[in-house]
Length: 442
Ligand SMILES: Nc1ncnc2c1ncn2[C@@H]1O[C@H](COP(=O)(O)OP(=O)(O)OP(=O)(O)O)[C@@H](O)[C@H]1O
Ligand SMILES: [Mg+2]
Image (cartoon, rainbow, N blue to C red; front, side, top):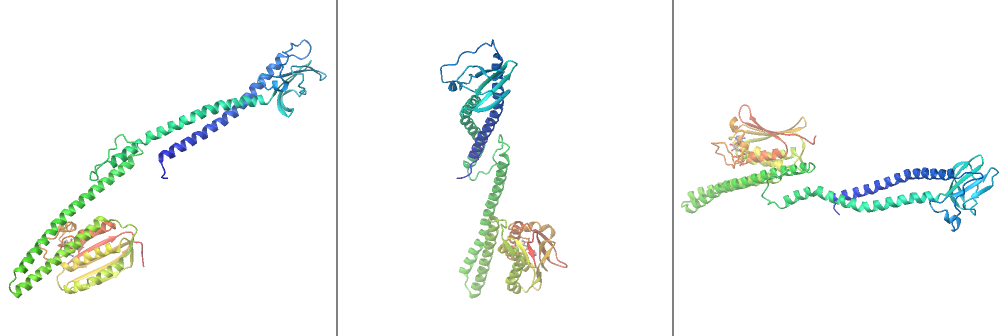
């Protein structure tokens, strides 16, 4: 069964109440016992005071006709005895009860297998002794207990019902919030109102509202992305259509070859755009590094090795500098996409004969990746813009979709990494990425 706040509150409060009722009952009995003892003792003393030892004493009423011991069980009946100085009993209201003479004052003793309370007042003429079964006091306490028990038994269900109602009433705002969320349309992400909400619920609703805002932003970003993607895909697809038309109309062998080359190039472009779009979309969907760990050094080495033929085809030297073995929280596949885009840019924008170099250093608990080239670099004012989606520096003749650095940025953000673009002396660009929180290095 699922834990329920309401059940927990009702049960714990009812149990607490039952426990405290018992504690109060115990305490009441303890106090009452003392009070009753006191009261009964005074009572006995008063009875004793009305009787005087010696001759001329006003004789109390004769005993009732019931068997004597049973008659004494009555709460207000006392055994009254008068003894002379010699220790002879001169009077008893229950003569057949031969309760012995006791010491002076209050006390208790067993007679006929039952405990009795007595009070003996020693006077000059003799002794007045008042006796009563101890049970009379127990009965009085029992009576209190019964009355108390009945009232608490009546009270308990009433109180539990009351607790149930109060808990239900107190939890009503929670139900209202759930209802408000359940009945809203999935595309309606406006914040929930916190007006009139109990303070305990406010943090939860505020957290939910935060989530709504982030969801809304994510949805908007997704919408924009889809619109952009559709737009960006239309251009290369139209180009493909055109190139195909040219190919169809080619008359000579040369024209045919040229058109075919154009079409091949067009397909390559489109493939690149689609690949980059998918890479970016993937970053948008699963952000965060959730528990995965990657050997970043190995990732850098693999990517450089994979891109060697590409660099060679552009007559560039692609070098691997110092690479420290560095474990990072993150996914190797994402880190590979990041490194690949940086080296790909360096190769793409550096003229033939240039140099591209990648290195990974472990510095002050951070992994520092640098990719340098000897290309044209990026003008200072363009540097913030190149990370925007589909942005390409004007006059750029190399093929590209303008998504590479946007992908780099998204992956870097998911890894809390910082990106810096700077100049390479004497010429070229240096891209530096600083990943904090390196797990270990060798
Ligand atoms: N190493 C570099 N040297 C010079 N310019 C660069 C370099 N890297 C990026 N740029 C500039 O920044 C722009 C954005 O780069 P980005 O990688 O985002 O897109 P792209 O390379 O044009 O397309 P793709 O999505 O295919 O990578 C590029 O168009 C280019 O003008
Ligand atoms: Mg690029």
